[in-house]
Image 1: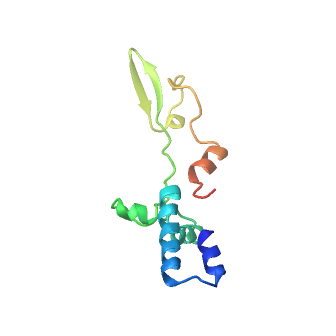
Image 2: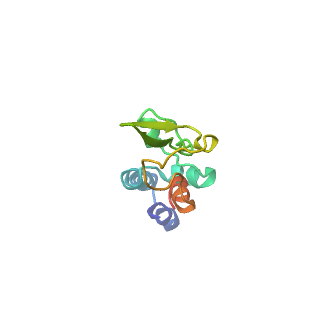
Image 3: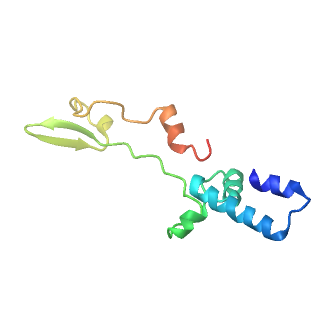
Length: 119
């Protein structure tokens, strides 16, 4: 925003001032958003989280897409130990599961997991 105002000023905007505003805008955006204005445009265009900060940390420029979490094993109690089953539906008569709660993500949780900057 500040950069566009400086470019629109036209009169009295010398190269030194424009350079200072450009560098200041990039430095401020890195401090606040952890990406430069160019990174923000690339992120919006690609649909991925891209940043030079990631490059500085030795990572790839764009964050890889996260894989869906694996379904946890189905575990039941059995004479003082816990037995876990990869496919409980293939085994009739398997007892009640030890853990309570859902076994998969809800659509809202999955949408939250896959959303990216700036949304």
